[in-house]
Length: 187
Image (tube, rainbow, N blue to C red; front, side):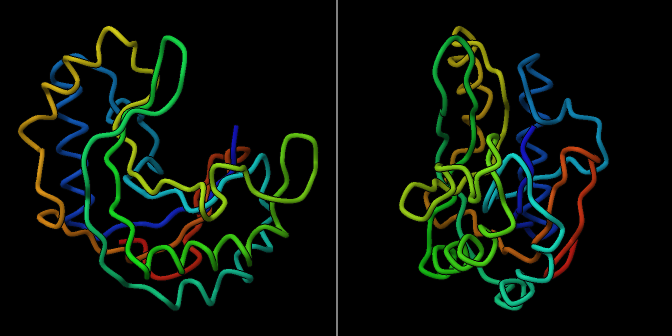
């Protein structure tokens, strides 16, 4: 399992994503709504690693001071390979989001290690390789993608019509299955 640092969104944006999770679940499709944990919430992963030391909380305090800022929800995107995929909504990158992300990675990487114990975050989190998104469903079989797109069609928006405010920064510890707000607010 991976540890992560995540950007949290405002209550209205949280509900907007949860509505999409519910639409997928109601259609009998894979959905993040199926995760019963109290820590399950819509978020934008800023960085991930095999392990992140708690000292990152102090290191990222200045990143939390950059909040809040506004981004926009974009279209549906599919990640992965093989028979099952991850489906998410893109987050339209703004200069503020990109610079805040870069600061989080720069300050946080010394506290992160990969599966071999080497320092640093996973490659897909590095500025220039990072795709900001909010996950809607994991492990979606290829044959269910058309039904999933159909279920999400009522929620399609023109870029900029679905603004979201990033209001918090939290650290997810997959070993203890706990989340700790380290900047901004939890909502």
